[in-house]
Length: 249
Length: 249
Image (cartoon, rainbow over all chains, first blue to last red):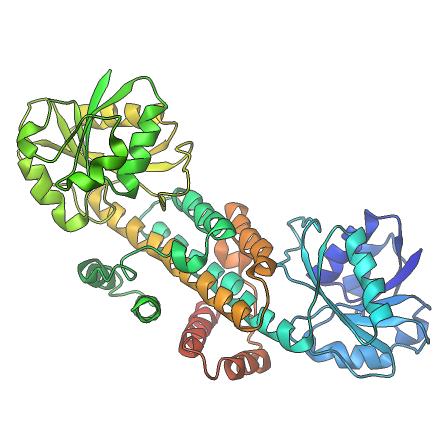
């Protein structure tokens, strides 16, 4: 049995705790947050707001904001064989007194939407091979897909994730806004959203590119810009169009 | 039985022809293209390269490039009850001698990937109610989801589609490029691509927004821009970041 203390109560913490509930080999023995209100949803667990009360565990999983990770790691009491892993895509492997590691799930989490750990990419980095293997086994218990990813690669992945998730979602928002203004249901765009995402499962995105920018259809591009005359997204349209044209010229 | 002549042999024509093959009530009686080579994949159909040889039909479906639609429509012989429909998102309802209509499938098509017409949004516009009903029935035979959409709304949908499909695909391409440069498999990003698209099926994209731009995480944004120092996508990162920040400020 692996004993885990989870530090933090945000989306990632929440989903890891739920994920560990479904497997027998891992036991969340304690949840920490500095704020007791945030601990209220976890009443079925032992909780604490004090570092001095942290229990001895095999793994301390730090799920706090990036700028608090080092502070939290430093406050965890030292146990020789314990692993202290953070779950951030952008913070490098720490260099503390602990056995430092990273256990980064490359996914977007919302509290109100269940996430399956099955095939979820889990990017693991550890100071020593044994610790990597230990974390890999936990990942495999969750049915996740484990990748060994170093700090530099992880930062690049995090950047790539901003493009394919955060920025993509913003474009969905723009599509939603255009529909709303013309009294059209966003539902009408959903099959297109799905198919566009499905296509790149099997096709190189460069080969999947279509549209007026790709085919240099200047009359359609000009009309679109006219349609956007009063929109805050007009320049973004221009910018994305140029970027596509530069990519395929 | 509805007799259809399809004009054009591109992706949309191809998928409509395949779709009509699966239903009993519609018969593609002829396929036209000005170029005989393009007709070669359709040897099981009657084909022609001449407008003068076009057969009498209930529906002429014009699936050619936007700038050729009017020319093709004008060349179709006049039959009192025939409907002449184009399939373009951006060209308005024509005003020719025919019963003009639009039969616009809001989806991205590739020749090498089968498309299900089930629940595919089909945006129909017609000069008269009877013709709308007639086209709606054909759409329903295909199991498509029929919407009545006028020319102005359709142009806005086409613009929205550029954001949620063409521009989104370009962001996938950028993610792919970043992975490639760091010897990381693009597979590692695919679950994130899927989940990001799945989220907006049930959640307003504005509520689904996450990431450094949304939370004004300037230190991560600056590090990302440093990572992109030699990339052609640095300015695009800045631009999308500002656009998100302006949306949520």
